Image (cartoon, rainbow, N blue to C red):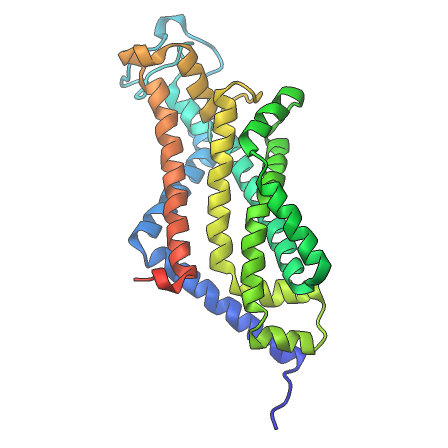
Length: 298
């Protein structure tokens, strides 16, 4: 007669599954050329944003003799409408954007995972009520609501991250709930219930180790959505941000740079960097989707 696994054996099994999933996650990124390029591209942008300002500090004084100059040996991306170096602004313009996107994705993932897992494990009326609330929440148009909120409240990077996370939890909640419902029929989840393990233990020790690839994929998607939202609000002039790639696009557009070929890099530079950042997240997300969905694996 087979014995019911003990809590120690269950912990060992969970650790083994987590270690295996982390190895698969690493191979999903570095085993796929596109995923590897996306990872190193994202890493390069992060390193540039964190350490770049040490070697390329921002110009604090305008120079009227260098207004909207084309690229040169001294300023290889040219200068802006105040005669300041564009490359220094590119280097310093990513920290706030990356921090806001990371905070948004982190908060939204925590909310989605906790609510989705808890709802699926508890079930009953609680699950039905939360699912109905999520369906209603998904009907709210997020960007128009952000535009309205920006008109009434001052949204800094932290406040914007919190608002975006609250607006983004419902979609992840539904997906996590569906995944947990599929995992609930697995033997190791049933054993955890048989051992009368707490719900939080089951969520963090049993469910999450089996959803690492899925969580990373959704994390990158949430970062991408947060970047789009912030750049859109900054371009409309609705966020009081000092130095940001979106601010550079807004200023360049208002200065009519699009009609000045000599200064076009004032507009193109932040646009290209934002596109590269989004592209890196898309490539990483694609690799994670292949890892999470065996039907997509080559």
